[in-house]
Image (cartoon, rainbow, N blue to C red):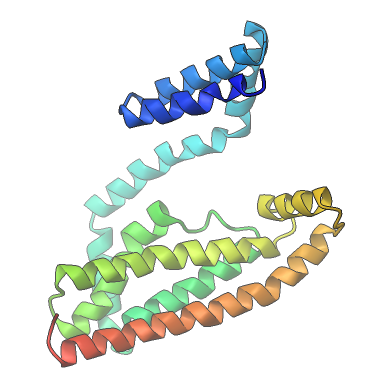
Length: 227
């Protein structure tokens, strides 16, 4: 009976492999798991409702994306590129290093939503990083452009991932506490948050060096000829 409840996982794998509508696949998988677990129809529907209520913030993306689309249509990307091109000391690595610092600091005080791939990286950070390189080296080949875009996306992920653990009320801190409690290690969220600070500092230094090395790589590439 316990193995039968895993049928939902199988349905998800097969459904996604066949490229069936994702919402339909997940719904069928949830119902099948509930039936296999001997839940009543009322309990299954209740679980769907509870999951929707707990994760309703996910739907906010449908409000964010149209706003970003309108801003881009109005020239947000071009204005960001023009702004960074006027700053002669700006380089791709420095722009991303500044955003890394901001992302970590804001996440450490609970403002993890102040940023993100769709909200900040796509419309602002990535274009500014590209503009900083184009202002110094001219038109960029696709390979270099993709390299810069990848670093821009990575900066956001690294900053929020290691910054949010410093904030006590973040879900990641509670997850760590629950895992440690389950293994007989009892710590308060305050201890976990405090010990996350050295990790965040180390990550900032390590990734900051990687960003400065990106500047060095771009200088070498355009000094010695594009590869």
